[in-house]
Image 1 (cartoon, helix red, strand yellow):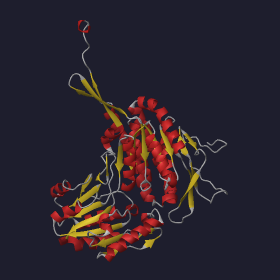
Image 2 (cartoon, one colour):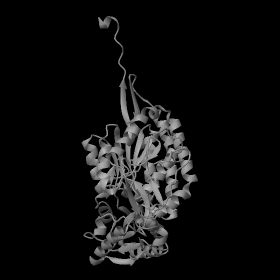
Image 3 (cartoon, rainbow, N blue to C red):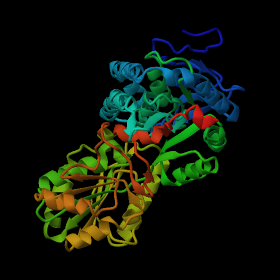
Length: 501
């Protein structure tokens, strides 16, 4: 329901605000902050516009937080912390499981919102909702671990307890999944949360926060704010500096992740960073080429390649390179073009990708297929004979561009796989699974797959990278180490009466 001022109360129903206004350009959605269980405007009231990536029309009018709003959200989370932390872990995860049910029941709402706001294809959004629901339900594994106290000998106990308020900063590209991931484990562990949504999908992220709140979370346990792009630095600084905030998790680019890490270090706040990637798929000479080509096409082009795990480099042994490229071309052209894969996040992204393609072609790469702009996206693009010195060799493309690198043998393949600043995910294709696993053990990456796509996420497993792809791990029981404090309790024998005299 709404008050006379238009303030929505986050209760049993997810609030979807569709509106028309004469004061602003016509738009579909309006968002507010969620602070202490209520949807509230910024103070003073201020808004920013999110424009659709394809049509450039205004799609969302979103509340624009400043430092005061950020501090208010953190203060609300701090006030709710003790009650939430003392609640049995089983009750916390039961509420999160209910939130998973709500998300899945209302999936088509967010399919429409994300299509309008981010240009996401329906199958990608449904995939996101399924993953998000799995993340919320997987927190049941944490409940059992949280209840375990380890005895160290006869006189010491090792236990874990909630850290406090957690700041989660989520990106736009897998909006439902990654906003959920930013809050699910922290909440299950007994922390309260402030979720800072992306200015590129404020309505999508508001939907996530409202859906989880509507499962029955007490007021202040999960708070949500958004900010205009020009005020991001101010808002993040206010949140990180707030004394109640004890943990920070951020998913996004390496460039911004470095800035977050510096701010967190200044305030001695531990942070979990899942940053840029340049997914590598290695095709050895004994690989099943059809299976490898299918995985490469899936990994490179799903969601217009706008996934941190996307396959951007395919390293292929010369002996099978021609046959593999032929198969990859056929798989790519069978995808149906850009329209079925969603839109790029902005026209600027298309311009950047075209520049990277032109750079590679000018330096000797060969265009196998794709490369044309179409319907707000880029036709899935395969480039052969990528080599050092080309931007596509070293920079994260974050778009539907797959570069094939030909190598003479396995040793060269391994050297090229490690010749990158990034280390999120790699995959090796070979009929000799033991040999593929042995190669993965030598690749500097947080995640590895044998005969599988680089785009794979299982909420029960740790997720994160090394090198410029960040540090720390989401997923599985590894989250306990990120979002709880370790406490050692040593019990010393009491002094006797005579010993105190």
